[in-house]
Length: 112
Length: 114
Image 1 (cartoon, rainbow over the protein chains, first blue to last red):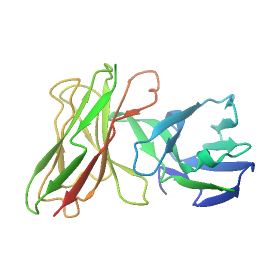
Image 2: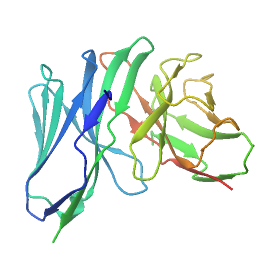
Image 3: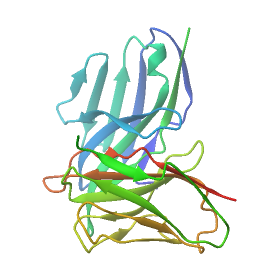
């Protein structure tokens, strides 16, 4: 089992749609969780951190379920500019210290 | 401005040559990471380091080497033992402790073997 697994893509959605991405992680000692956005041929950039209580930033909502080791990202009212790859990231404690593990990413294409 | 800098942006290497990719950060972060990304693929961890003079192998360390002599610097050497080195290499840093914080990335180095 991969340490971090994401929904396979691509997701092709019309502008204005609501889309949800899911992510599961295997290391129960994981301590912090993030969603990153990566545009084509660019470095990943932080979209939002994920907290147990859930957090919202405008059209984006992230949720964490520690019992199920599951993270989600919801995008409402999709814009063309939301087209990108979304990466789930887990910071887990290992013998070597904190280790950031990325999911393979889910590609989103928002269309007119 | 604080940030993380990778150089060069593009690098061409002949087969059989070693090449070193630079990564410098002035964010005073403890942890630094190297990832490799192939076209259409996710990020795979090569090496990571939590403190000076210590580093750990990631998932695909074979054919690579690193050093962490200074907190600010974490260079990656791609050796001739790496059979398929052409890829996009990303360096990141984060603060360590208390569960860790988000990672900040450099702009990446695109390595091509010619």
